[in-house]
Length: 330
Ligand code: BTN
Image 1 (tube, rainbow, N blue to C red):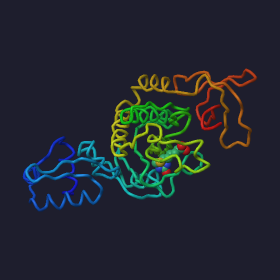
Image 2 (tube, protein in one colour; image 1 turned 120 degrees about the vertical axis):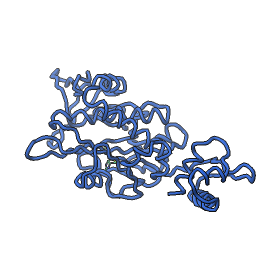
Image 3 (cartoon, protein in one colour; image 1 turned 60 degrees about the vertical axis):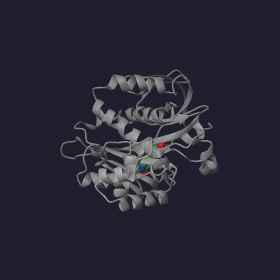
Image 4 (spheres, rainbow, N blue to C red; image 1 turned 45 degrees about the vertical axis):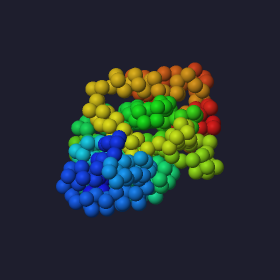
C-alpha cells in the first residue's frame, strides 16, 4: 500500500522529489520511503536517486495492476475497479461478483485469462503481459430489447480510448470488432442476464479484450492473418495501465450517455465503420447454411446493417456476423 502511494507521488512529479517530502506527505519514516523505492525498483520501475535532490521516476514498466491503473484514475473510481493477475474469464468472474451485489460500473481486469471466451462459443487467446482483458457491469433498468445496441456503443467507447492513448482511430467492423490495417485488435462479448419475474434486465456484462503489446510472432499461424496489436501498428510499447484507465473513462462516459446520448454514439459509429460500401458474406448463426454474399449499404439508426444480396433482396441485420472481403485475410 505504502509502495503504491510512493509511486503515485513520484508519478505525479516531473522532477526530483525529496525523501523528506514523501515521508511528510504520507506520514511515514524515511526508512519506509527507502523500502518502498527498493520494492518498486524490484518490480521494474526505474527510479533515480541523488543525495541532495531525492528520487525521480524515470521509467515505468508495463505492469497491469491496481497501483499502475490507479495512477490515471481518481481513488474513488478505483474502489470499483478490481485487477487480478490470473482468472479463467473476467466475464465469468464479474458475473460471480454481480451475484454478490457488485454495483453498476464495477470493473474487473486481468493480466491474463486461462479460459478467455469469445463470441459464438469460440475461445479468446489471452496471454500474460501483453493484453488488457476487461469486463464491466451495467445494471440498466430496462427491457432486454432496448439494450441490444450497447455492444455497438461499446465499440465506439473503446475506439476512443485507443485513440486517446495511441493516437490511431481503429475502424469498427460491424457489429463490434475493432480493426487496424485490416486486422483485429479488439473483440467484445456482451452477456446479459434477465430477471425471470419482471423480464427486465438484471445485469449486463461487457467483456473487452485488446491486443496491446503482442509481437507479430506471438499470434501463431492461425491468428497472424486475423489479429494484430496496438504495439505492432504503432511501433511503440503501449502502456496497458493507461489504456485500461482510458477504457474505464470512456465506458463511464457511455454509462452516463446511455440511452439519451444515442445520436453522439451513432454518428461516431458511422464515421468509424469500415463495413458499408464493401462486399461481405453474411453468416447466419446457429443455422447450417452457407454464408451469403451481399453488399453492405448502410448503418441504420438502430445500428443494424442494411445489406443487399446478389439477387437484389435487401435485409436489415441486427445480429449475426459478417465477413468482409479484404479484412482478416478473407
Ligand atoms: C470476440 O471477439 O469473439 C469477443 C472476445 C471477447 C474477449 C473478452 S476478454 C475479457 C472478457 N472475458 C472473456 O472471457 N471474454 C471477454
